[in-house]
Length: 253
Ligand code: FPP
Image 1 (cartoon, rainbow, N blue to C red):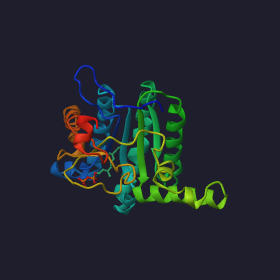
Image 2 (cartoon, helix red, strand yellow; image 1 turned 60 degrees about the vertical axis):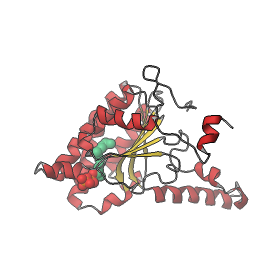
Image 3 (cartoon, protein in one colour; image 1 turned 90 degrees about the vertical axis):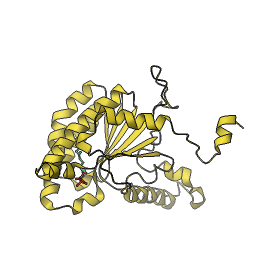
């Protein structure tokens, strides 16, 4: 991937995040406020997801990573899990062709083997169809957990040590970074969580080390272009120090 520096949007002079990650929270509450079943909130959530992909394209975001279903979401009532699975199948069925036309590369992270054969097939088709695309990268995290991610990276490293391809002394943060999910992409610049909760909920916990964290009270189905642009404006005003002092950055010493 050839993204090396933060893009400057010429029209607005904003410092744009290259990689935006989103915890799409609040579907259930959105539905409850309307005396509707939670599944109606998830349906509205899919519409907001589709619009957000468009809005990220408009705003020249290069990588978008969405938390669609966590390792822990399996603990929800069976009926809700089933309705979410059906929704994922129908959303992929309805959207992938258009996303492909827009040159979007769709990738999935997480333990996809936990899903039904039908959903796994949709996931495979979407990944294969869009594999060569060179536009925005859209990562969808499904049955994903940050702790699982770190553990699977450790497992790969351990196997390489057993096979004598790596030595214990090779283990450091840089090496681990090469085996967690999204290793081939720029690290997330901007994390957005909707729905008012201020937590990371086991999403990309390794990758978020230096990400700017933005929390919005808006429920996910109501998250629109204006809300995305608010988050981008906020990001643009952040001073990212990566451990350095503010003086080092402003005086370039
Ligand atoms: C959290 O809201 C949302 C989810 C667990 C599901 C998110 C999924 C979508 C928005 C669909 C996206 C689809 C694709 C194909 C990417 P919640 O149910 O926890 O809301 P609550 O906190 O108000 O109860």
